[in-house]
Image (cartoon, rainbow, N blue to C red; front, side, top):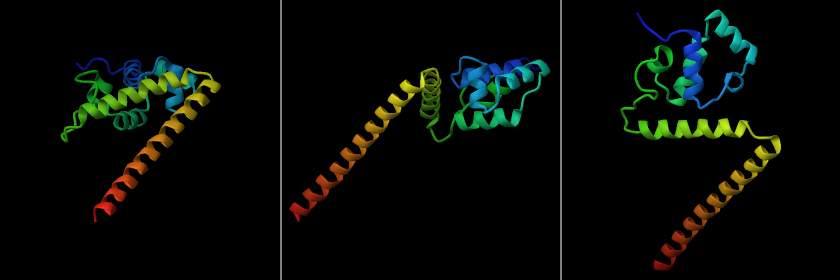
Length: 139
């Protein structure tokens, strides 16, 4: 007999796999209300297509999500599985923390991230121009 296939178990594993702390966070991610999550738990019915879609996008193993067996993250034959799983877990953790902050704090983090991205873009462009200039001088 297969264990851990109840709606509670699947929803709990989905939240865990996505780095979420509670049903309210899960509801936001699934773009539904917390009362809907509660209803799924009470009816022991979960929209598997939606859960599977998020699992696939986040690199979660479907065996782990749906029946609670095996590793949490999928293995990729291309050898990038640990990087995908790590990035997915990191992104989920950051997103979960970000959602717990006030609007002002979220805005401040957004501005810092945008500034960091602009700085990286400028550094990359400077490197390209320096290489092109060196090539031109060498010719």
